[in-house]
Length: 430
Image (tube, rainbow, N blue to C red):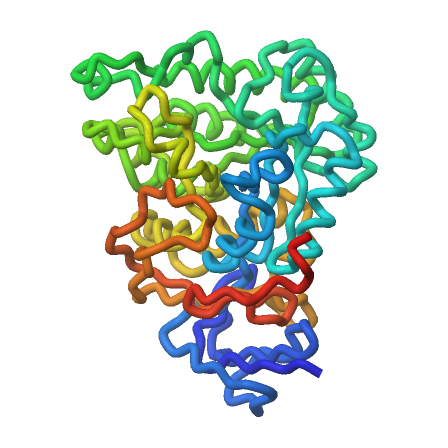
């Protein structure tokens, strides 16, 4: 029998702080008791000053396996997730080969289970090979348990093809998640189209590259009734479109990334490729619109878009460097510092809402009888930004002073990370 007692915490369930209840007892992977002054079972952990809530869930993680394991693989990505307080991640399908068939989705899920540090949930492609020409094997992917479908890294440009995918997935309550960047409007763009790009003489990506795709897709959502999720929202205009769609009653959710909440386009003035991402960092007014969208519920989720690249890939001039940054380890600190949420809202955007989107019954909950997927988060602690657990170091947070520290991650009752010291995988790496 495995036992663990968390003491003296601010305990946060799906409906908010559990007033007067400061202890959590975990027995054999289950939350056995929540109360005060409970009898200690197993090891006792003093959580004074910390919040104990549902483990974080990321619905937008690039694990790079299969095909690009020199950037990251499922084991190293799972380690980074555990260090950041995550107990589940949804793996994006832009791997090599792309996850466009059932056996590939099962491979990702099986590798995640073999590592055993977090739930690894495969997403599936909308189109075969993410090429945008014909539908992926949506039936096989659904049979393999996939519920979230995306060609992330590219938008589905063919509206007719996207409509057919939406109609098929609407019947199965699947989620269409869109990387909303119009390839034509963004062609050649290296950063946000604005004052900084003009000063640097660089081609920019206008806000309209994002907003026109969202507007088109929302018309298809009206037509098909599908559940639709907007990935990595970056503009104030996009927030307005999502707000209006929700007011209309459309089944729409949206995510913002930590980097779009923390940095704006002035960070690219030195052309450090660490800050090169797609969509690009926007202007301060866009950043504030994202923060306000999270506070008001227009944006439902903080998702990392953790996109690892090897040092030799990012160590190039700006225009030759790939898009993408890592963020699993410090996402919670960003939310804690810049969004200004109370504990209930904090866990909603990092745990409860993403678990609901991904359909994960064992995640996003803290109540007696629930699976013990939990995080101990100190909102006043200083985050360790001196190194990374990921295989890749293309993170804009390294070396920054950040407030908010993950003290412990508990996955199915097992401590998988304590002060960023990550447990060994449960199985061989293979």
